[in-house]
Structure formats: structure tokens, C-alpha cells
Length: 112
Image (cartoon, rainbow, N blue to C red; front, top):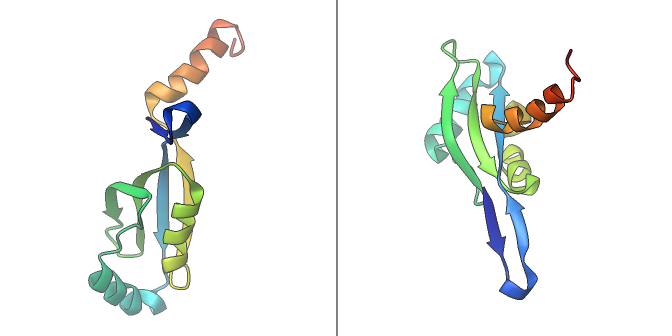
């Protein structure tokens, strides 16, 4: 998704990207993590839209699918939790996006 920012004379394009925000914690940190999650809701800061969030059945962690147009907002969210959780943030893309990258390369014979 593209968003135009600024005066029409000076357009700046901001492309929102998808990320996974995955976390794990040790059994030792469990109670502290649960208390903080219940107190805060674990919501992301401004600049990050959480599209969905899933928790491991064993309670050891989980991941969220997020959309953001800058890495600093994701870093801000990670800093809120990185003293308690091991966090891994990965840029991801949907089938349509990767298809747009792979199709021209396949048509050029790259994957033969």
C-alpha cells in the first residue's frame, strides 16, 4: 500500500511492509511476561498496525503479523519487550508480491 505524505508539490511515497514479530520466553520469565501482557495488552506503538496475533499452545511464545512503513516503529515495540523476550522481526510478503518478483524471472528462464 502506498501513502502520499506531504505537500502535493513534494510527494514522498511510504510503502507499508508486512512483518512477523515473533517471540519466545523462558519458563523463568513466564509470570513476568504474563503480568505485563495483561497490564498492557501487548499492543504495538503508533506506526505499527497489528493485523493478527497468535500464541503457541505450550505458552512459550508466539507471533504477530504487522504492517509498518518504517523500522523504527518496530524497534520501539521490540524495546518494550526485549528485556523479557527473545524477539525476531522478519519482513514478509504475500503470494501476489512474490509472484510479481518470480514470474518475470521464470519467464526469462532463470529457474529452468
